[in-house]
Length: 135
Image 1: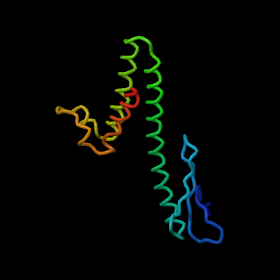
Image 2 (image 1 turned 135 degrees about the vertical axis):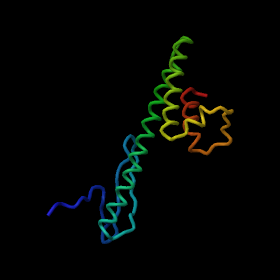
Image 3 (image 1 turned 90 degrees about the vertical axis):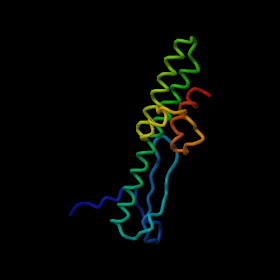
């Protein structure tokens, strides 16, 4: 009989409810959450859903790290030509973020860009661009 997959799953002392515990990569944050079920299969399904969300968070964190590094290059660059090259890299990275979220049309559309008309999620690439440039 194959071994049951209980990675990140545990039960508290004397309890019968399954809990999940894992570390968010790239941070010191640990997530502990009750899965609010006594059934192992249901707990595994809920755990897998949380792990998928963690994977997406890691991808977003890597974008943020990349933009911070580009910002440091931009602010440390001496001449105007070098600043322009780094600015273009930052713009490409923020456009990649917008494209992955399916929001590139908002930034490259034929109308005026109005940040007041966009949600927080839609503004994330624009804010990353502005933050990376130190604006």
